[in-house]
Image (cartoon, rainbow, N blue to C red; front, top):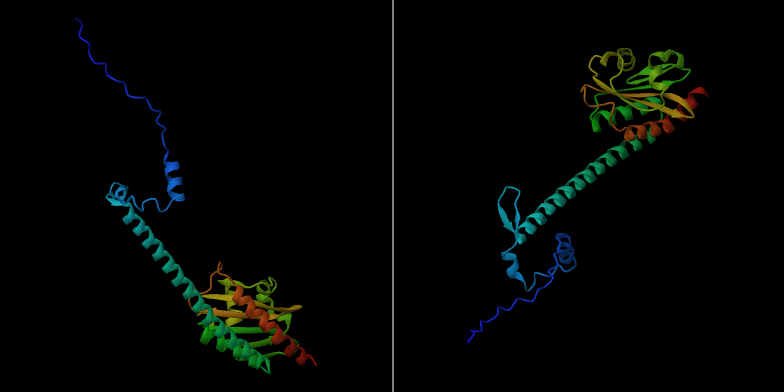
Length: 238
C-alpha cells in the first residue's frame, strides 16, 4: 500500500513593492504626527552623528533645533547691534546738521564740521577748501581762486568721494603742517550746480579710510555742506 506523504503547501506569492527613501521622506513630511502612537519606532531609528557616534532621531532633531536657535539668536544680536550703531550715527549726524544750519559764516561751517568729524566720528583733522574771489584762511578753512588749487584738481574733477591714500602733493596742500601725520584720508567734493570746493578728512591711522569702503555717509555730508556753503559764498560776491 502506497504511503501518502503530505505535500508541502507553497506560500502564496506576493508582489513586494520596494519603497524609496524619497517616498518615506514625503510620507513623513505629510504626516508629521506619524510617530505619535508609534513611539517604539523611535527606539529603532538612528542617524549618524557628525563625530561618528549615533544618536536617536529625537536627539538629533533637538540638536538641530538648538543650532538653529543659536543661529537666530546670533542673527538677532547682530541686527540689534546694527540698529544701535545706526541710532548712534543718526544722533551724531543730527547734531552736525543742526550745527551747520546755525552757521552764519564760512568759518562757523568749518568749525562745526571739524568738531563733529573729529570729536564724534573719530577723525583726526579736517580741511575745508572753497573756491571764491575773496581769499580767506583761518583755522581749517581756506577760500581761494579755483586756479590756485591745481594740486587737488584730480580730487575735485572726479565729483565723487574718494577714500584711501592721497598723493604727497595733495596731502601737503590740504593738511599742510599736519600732512606728515595723515596716513589715510577722504576727499569729498562740494558740488551744487558747480564745484564749490572740497572737504578733506584726515586720519593718522592708515586703515581708517580705505579705497573699497562705502561712501554713502560721506556723500551725505557733502550734499549737506553744499546747501549750507552755497548761499554763504554768494553773499561774499555781493
